[in-house]
Length: 249
Picture 1: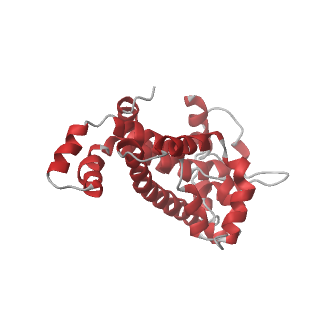
Picture 2: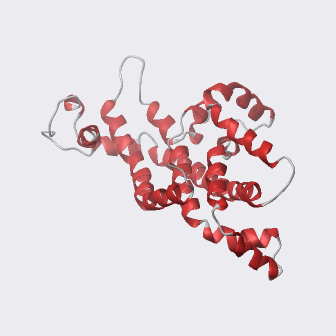
Picture 3: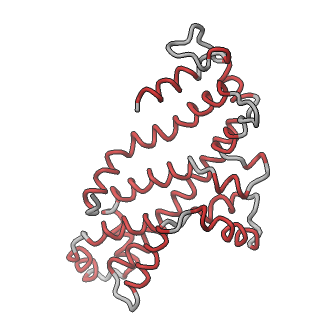
């Protein structure tokens, strides 16, 4: 597992004529990185990926936590049915709903826009499921004490439940960020404007029909992997803690 990563890292510093050779490069060069930062507009692609990933993550954490709190702690008719319907969406992958989702976004006039990249990616049933399992383990005495102090549902959620769910929220933030940073199919489907390309789509543009600039592709891949690696290293402990406390094994 480590060997392919090391090969990718070393190959990013190789000249084009040595790209498929094994072992250490005879001549380390930064020309590959210089090309992707100057001629490829990689900084623009990284910025677009960062905007989409951060906005989707922030909005998803807020909306998913509110939905999960309602499903876990409130009592209302049809709660089980609503939760079952949400979980059932896990059985449907993006390629299956790609065409109808594209038509909906087109009708809403969100093609070739940040809204089209962001809004459809916010909802994910796994986030609601993970947070609901976490909220089920929070003692009801805490909410009852807040109720005695005159807190309504919204203040109980904001002042009591939300601060306690930081480990689960942190783990979800890692998952959402990584998923949206590495998104390819949906951004490729709804954007034609080069200024809206995300990192993965931009890197794929280096691949030709008959030949590919692998030295530039590997250099761009190494740069694109840096934010995901940093986010994962920062959040991996929270990720494991959330899995333990939510009862998922």
